[in-house]
Length: 322
Image (cartoon, rainbow, N blue to C red; front, side, top):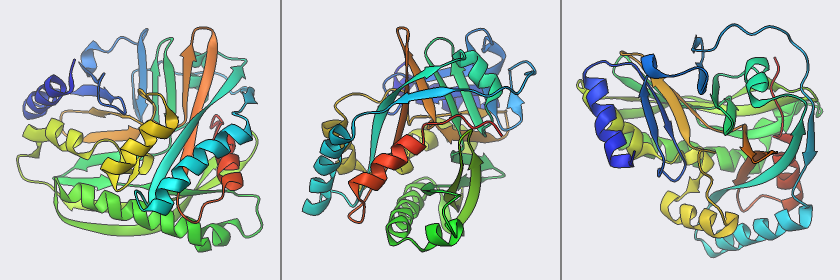
């Protein structure tokens, strides 16, 4: 299915109140769209908050991830390429992502059942997502987005205060909130930031992380269900996993990362016939042959340092268990 057919079908199903699952890759070249009634649990499992096609899970054992990260000099080379573009003024925020090979003592299906996240998606024998990040929600003629930028180990002394006061994290978050506000203004009116920089906890087997989000809300036209596909595609790719300004930053990402992201940092979600809920596909494990790779990244600004950004992409390689 190409993106034009995806958009048109999504518009039609929204107009007819047909419940569906959608999955869009970062490059928007391989979108998936299917009626919820047609989703085969042996091939695809999903959970969007409390809506799922997965059978009840049993057991609470831990998951061991052995990380084999990209060597720091290799990461630093990519970082310096991005930083050069920032210094030249091509971008003021670029989301740089890398792959970390991992070895696991569980299958992707096991990890789906054992992990905890707002958004979970398993495409059998291909990839698994367990994401905390909301892309957009549509309810009662309003569209909501919750950009997430800013991460810190909760064990750091005065972690919450430190995170909220960090100039680099402030600059990065303000940039993304402004980008998302502008994005939503393409499809909605009266767009406002209703909550700014609130902190949430995410627990991993090895540590607790603090992450910062904001809430941006806009009003949709009364016939918005007739245009669900147009609305979604107009907002892609997600600003929080690309950067600003978006068109030029996407060029930088292609130049530096040197490979397609595929479904990593794309979006997926469901329409239940009335409301739409979707997440950004971060916290992502993909299977290549008999090997597993965990993809992670972070936003690079003029205030960033290579050492701290490298540590952040390693810290983000985890499976949330509670």
